[in-house]
Length: 100
Ligand code: FES
Image (cartoon, rainbow, N blue to C red; front, side, top):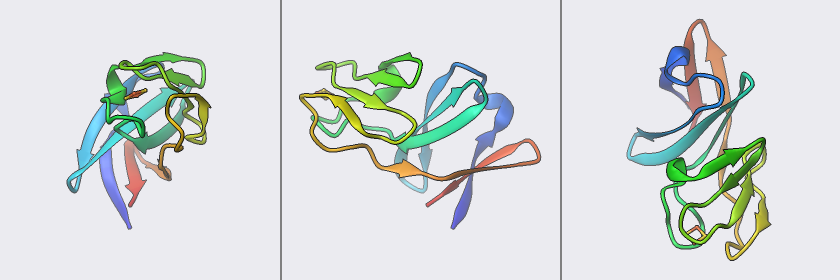
């Protein structure tokens, strides 16, 4: 089921942003016009990942510096062990839709 996440203009290139969709916290990333959407909280201890640091595809958690690949959610460096859930995104007209 696709649900509107935001207008495309709400997520400029290079941005990472938190959204709440139907009670779910997600993180959306615009990497050179490739849009990725992942769980909004770190799988280690629940840090808000929108406050992390993004360098290329690598997202560093703000609390204990686990690193994840935003393209597939995989853990690149612990202490986190579980990958981030990823969500499919579709672009239609000027809007982004997330597949819940
Ligand atoms: S909460 Fe993210 S590494 Fe601990």
